[in-house]
Image (cartoon, rainbow, N blue to C red; front, side, top):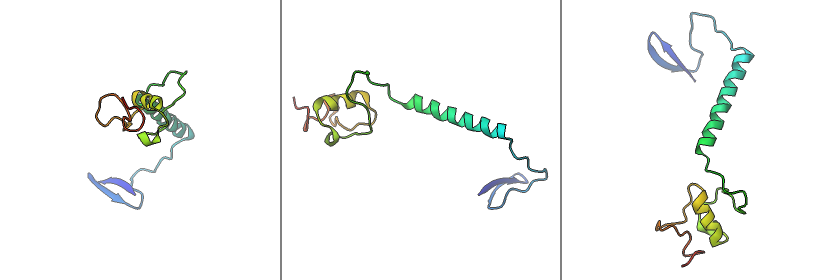
Amino acid sequence: MNKCIINGTVTYQQAPCPSTQPRKDPTIEELNAAEKARRAAAAKSRTETAPLPAATSSRFSCDGRTYCSQMHSCEEAKFFLEHCPGVKMDGNHDGVPCEAQWCSR
């Protein structure tokens, strides 16, 4: 699908947009520069949204698990609650995860 502007009106069509000028294909240098910029933007996006890494001495790591049923101990649940984004382990928001399964008071 091509988005074309014809006589000031935006149109969408299967065929390439008509042009009064010959089309200039991008050079390999332009393509490489565009790919490098895309990768840099993606890497920057990942570092801005990535959680801070846990201490290197921790035996746990954020691996996508979010629920108490996926934990194996209270210590692990506490690590996930403190360090990992998007966890669903503290329903009453009191700072104690998995009270029914692992971290009973």
